[in-house]
Length: 237
Image 1 (cartoon, rainbow, N blue to C red):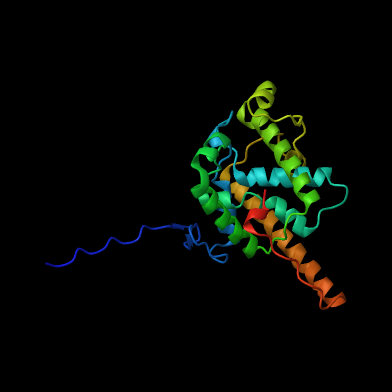
Image 2: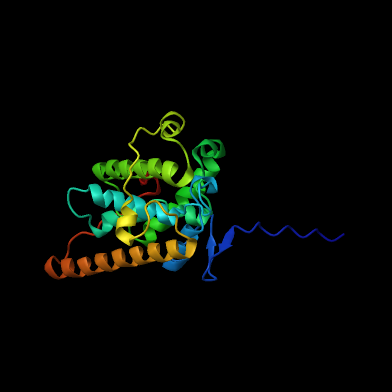
């Protein structure tokens, strides 16, 4: 009697816009292009896809909003590394394909947390992100929470009372949209995915160019300086 063939292992990779494959369980840092990441984040929605308008808010636009808020409130201009930490703080969600809403995230537990951390660690390695400093992380969380409060009211349709009482966010709801100032659009407009992807990609490429230029200048003036340590997967917010 012949043996029954063993079942093929379940597929754990996803196809990216470039045609490349990303293993979601053991992600390789070089498996995607910058454009892959931008497109995936532009197609990943915040707030469970809920919106007061015809388009849901993307994680790509949220990431740019957090960066803009952080820059607006900074005592001095952000370094390229600091800005990259802000821009890429939710990058793993683009590969997961969703930004899990808080009430569900706790119930999904360790499996989701493990996959998310592995994906974020691949992002950290790919873009050589430094670890958060205590002060940098605190300022990031303030910008992230401020972004959430504004999105909830202006983009999703929560009331200010609901933001405080249900979401538990005490941050004031911003009226001025820094992205409207940066891009010359109506305040709190939600971008279509192709536009969000291009703007995210433009910001990412500009920050990578800035960092490379700064590293070149630093190498010329201070050969032998120790490299910036990379963050551990658990080091992100």
